[in-house]
Image (tube, rainbow, N blue to C red; front, side, top):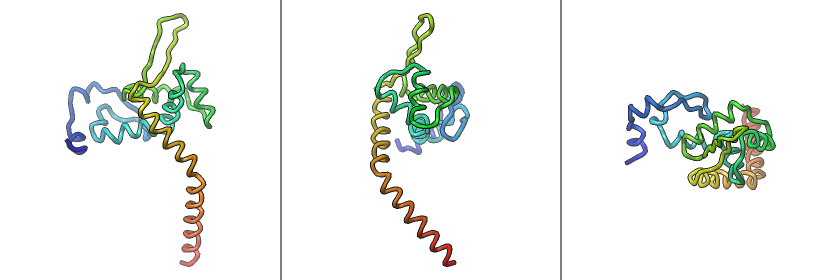
Length: 155
């Protein structure tokens, strides 16, 4: 079955029960994943916070507040609301496991599923490539900007 055929198939029962999911472009209506399921999962995995969550969870399971601090070490911190939404989205996609233990005080740990570990390895490889090739990207940007500046002066 092709991507477009899969995208065209809509299960009305699933769509009516699907929770609202927040992606990189904001809130989505229930059942939106039927429009382009591949793109939506890619959006979740490569979102600003999704990338950092997946890479952090490669190292070990984290409690919510620990994960928030870990992500904050890599630049601007994530809000509690956005972290909770992103974790819930990744959990729904089968990438993150939430382990709530009935102890006092309550303890909730987040870890990667097998599927999540596979996705996280790919995301980490892309992040490492970006770090390694950043000088080349910066050179290309400078060359592009200089060429644009010259062509705008000429016109």
